[in-house]
Length: 384
Image (tube, rainbow, N blue to C red; front, side):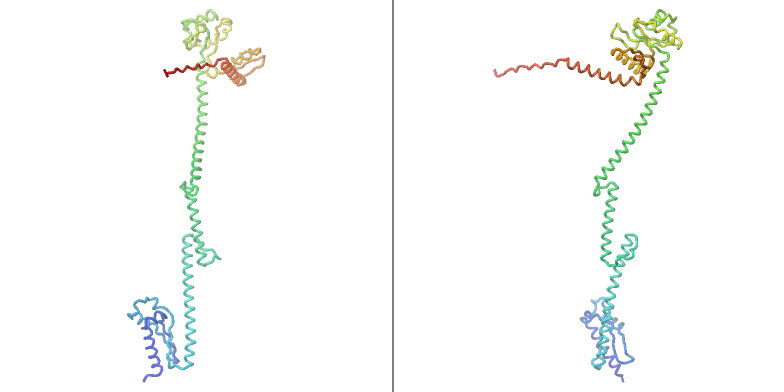
């Protein structure tokens, strides 16, 4: 004989199996953990979770449902109709408590999922940025999204700056290109300036060395002006013997020739004389004052630099004499009324005075030259 509790258990088992076999009830409530409340001490709490899950999974009617739906945890309360009123009241109270627990579990699951999603976003952000989140930051998903959006904007600005620095077309690509072009131009100008300074220094050194070599070669030379004759070497030796009373033979002279050709017969080209001994040269220069009032004069063979300075002194001497002042040249200085002026002091005023004279002469020529008259040609008529 079965006891009353066993009979009650069998009835509850049959009812539970029928309700689990119903697909509509299974989809709506999704209860596969049936808690059976019986007053008996032996069957106070009976769990049919594994049995009903296995039956629902093997049932062909539940082929459309997934394992997550089968493993869900809503509660189906099955109570026998033969129970007393007090037992029913107790069972309804237990049912409400179970429902509250299930709702709490669902809310906890939702919060747990939300926290997991925020933590995954936080880990992704930390992986991108490379730094952990600061303390006190809000863990809400909206704040995280806003920070990610701000980070994307900052990354975009950084890429624009990198493009501008690399010379690519960014937001201000033209300005960057012009700045780079100006920098290259300035570098080229600096290089050219350095090269120019180097070349000017080398040119100065070369000029100095050329001046000394030219002066050394012209050490044994003299220049004679306004000496007539067809044979320069013979004419020079005869001049030294007749006018200067210096015994000289053609063999003591290395060479003598004229510098260029003169178009005026009364004013022949100067003669350049090469001496073999410096003693003979100094003796000729010391006796050169004997050629005064003859129209013939002797001078040193100057270098180009010395020749320009000497010419400057002579022309300044001429200007001073035109102004009625006494002026004479002594070596590298001009003496005007007892005041000695060096070549460096005389060079600038001479140049300015000569330029003024040239300008005045040009103006006079332009004013004196008559303008050419333009005659209009008569037009011939071809009408006839």
